[in-house]
Length: 376
Image (cartoon, rainbow, N blue to C red; front, top):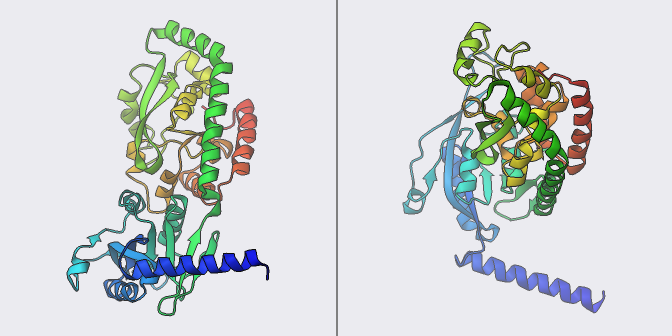
């Protein structure tokens, strides 16, 4: 063993001793933690964490739940939020959170670094899959007692502790360096796109203004990453009163329950609107959204607030990344997709996201735009 290796081992051992001692003495270096599970298991977990301070998990909130059996033998279990009664003054200071689609974003705002699953949630449940995607993509550690954990599509790390061995999961593609590279790519390529498309934007703006004298741009509130609203820009392709008659048309065509309301022969679309929609020119102003940081070049379609209000637990995972000008929806059929197909491609994109995957989607987008696949 070389002297350098020996010194490295000693240095790491001393650093670990220093860290564990400060955690035992309550001097920081811990991870603010949210505990999810049955009230009984939450109590037990809190006691275990007090006895295993070297793990560094510091409870700041709890999410008490119970599993409700379905009406039939094969029906899936439902998870219901239940009250949490504190056993002592320390537990009384913990925040009690409901188990809903807002939990991941609430965890981020509480500055939680770890979400610890005590029990109840099973590895094959939709809720576990949604939590896994949410926490890992936001850089929040997802942890479980080793006896419960069985997570796929993530890199697992074992934290050995005599009283409470824990497995943590991480989606390695959501690293800080990768996020920075994606943002720099968005800035660079959106600037290039704006410069190159400037003559096209000028001509389209003049044609839209000449047709009916209305505004050139259509501004609409959409929901971005972590549920933050932003104003999305597009070239106006519909009549000025299009939004006013949207509800009436939805009722006439029986499409009130659709997330995305689009008609193949929409009477609201103008003459120039048909052309810029077919060629996707109406989307060009969204490069300004990318430049501002509201959107990315590639990501799920930016949803409307009323769409987000109807999201289920798993589908709300699409709010964990920036919406994109193009994405899996754009290259998989666009408006021809059913609601279930749209949900599947969005969630799969988030779970399997990679920079090379984004490049592939950008290349496929060119083909989809040329063919006009699903655009109307």
